[in-house]
Image (cartoon, rainbow, N blue to C red; front, side, top):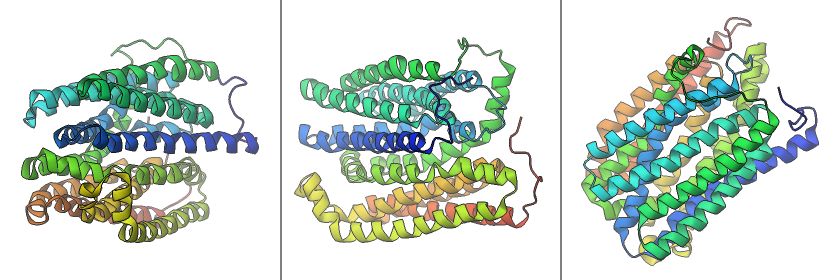
Length: 429
């Protein structure tokens, strides 16, 4: 049960301030992640290191989806409290272990060099700490303590950035840098996220056990979600591994460097979309079709406007921005920027439509769509890269994401069409 530290939903002033903390913290954290990909260009002339950094970020992103198990959207829309906070936290410990082992196998299977494998696996530790923090932040979000989440993001981003710059300058070794970053992340998890969560809600002893039947039911309920998130994240992984194989690690380094500013686009879009999801779940369960459709219309208008604005900004300001952020050598590859902007923005937009399907518990359709997009991307990405270079990878992602968004939009429209009050149970058990 929440104590007096939890925020009442009716206290709009406190809630607004709390959400603002989350927004600022999320954007700041993404900014710090992006700054790392910028400053490494100034700290080394070795584009191999830049490429390995980009490879580690991309590969671990796919396996982070296994660690997180697609559970955050499920967790925050578990309105009926079918599963306890302890169930969510214990399940995350199990999924993080599985994710790490899977990453070990994959890193070796793609025939990376020993040094590349070491960097990937150490960076994966950072990702697993992040996944663990994510489940605690889900508990905080349900209790409307967005302020704690935002402050955690700010602390993590700051410490990671300081560690990255300081250690890399001293050692010129990515694996040592990643070790120190992981230790910083772990400190925030242990001494802030966990401590604050326990102040706000009652958490019993969690431990690590494989005998909790309710946890296995939770994992089964979310199993379709992890397939979606893994395959969705793997769209970019497949493309970048293909770029590495066809164009080389240095060209991947250039591609990753130009892609890095677009992280802010993705996170900002996610921050804008995310607050709508619990409301959409509630309106669906309440049978309020009019309000449900109203939410969709607002977000679709945001997507259209965002696409137009970002396309114009990338076209007119892209070269200038890359030269300002990096150098003339990177700016000479400005033709890579606009397709990457489209990839990132479309990915965030697909995430929103997927979030709606998760909120209304349409998991099977979620999987069907992403499997189609994954197979399409897998088939066309290498021919496009051979034809258009690095941009071919971006074109493959754009095509796959547009197809996926259309599929999800059609599914949602069909669901609205057959919608009847009380037709569905909002939570699987």
